[in-house]
Length: 462
Ligand SMILES: Cc1ncc(COP(=O)(O)O)c(C=O)c1O
Image (tube, rainbow, N blue to C red):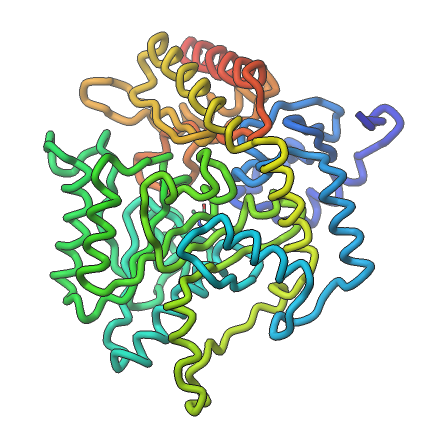
């Protein structure tokens, strides 16, 4: 590891950061007395800060992005080679890595056909919404324009992506929102809205149909869902949910958009989360793991049927998809994504994800057996959560300060970086989140869960 912290003085960097950088999702008052965390190097599962301290990263870059781990020289080489050959041309033209990656991606997604490039998850979802809207105008006189989203899901940070966000605290103070987005109930059985029902999955999916009927099926053009809700508390929809959702979408001619921004590229043990459930989406969006953060890239992938809606009438000058993303033309994105995909395949990281994911769930169940504060453990692949409660019977959530204290203790005492649902819900920011890179080993997971064990013990004792 090239850590010459002793030789380097980072005080100027820290001062420059404190003076001028506005950190994401951060209240800055504390930085008047403490230094912000600045990460300067990464290798595999580990990162180093300006003090030279090594941390085990259990959240793949904070927001479940670095799926293949840090320090991948072959990705850096692929990006460098591409940049010196051609860094950019607007995506109204094609590029060599863009064509190659689209072909390889579609080979992993039977039933899908077209890839539209942009550069963030929010933007990929905005493209999907614009596609729904334009089809509504072209085919249904503008009427079938509403888009349904689910309570607790998140689809991004731009105003329209937030308009489709099921997390009250992320939305608060940013309205008014884009019209035409309508919420459907969440599907977290642990916090069932309908009491103790049989077939909770079917019940939760039927709740979507109830909203469609209330709004009028002829007004609803799209439904966006995360395959496994991520920042909303790691929620895998229960048995029966997806089949019923698919049925409902077909019945009412509603385009099903699956937001794979977190789950895509192996996070849950399949290439895409929806592939666990036999779902046939009309559109799939993806970002974070597509190039593991080595370059900014996102994709909105559609079926050929959706794509065909935009070339059916060349005599109409307005009928094609009149959208552009400047940085969707950066060639570094697909160049990095190609190498990222090669690594996932050659190193059998999907298989490792499934195996290690099961191990992580076992370890978390072990912690649940030891600590009453853990009310529920859930997850899919290397994407797991532990919901914290004050009382297992009533399921009263812990105050968010407890989860935050556990995260902080884990970081300071064990040098393990974990996450917690963060400024998302009123009263329910209480789920610890784990999403280590897909290269992790049992020994990494032992270190992570030992860190959590110690942190819970210390925080509750304090
Ligand atoms: C499920 C999901 N969709 C979309 C987004 C937005 O992605 P971005 O931050 O790249 O705009 C996120 C970000 O966390 C996400 O978790």
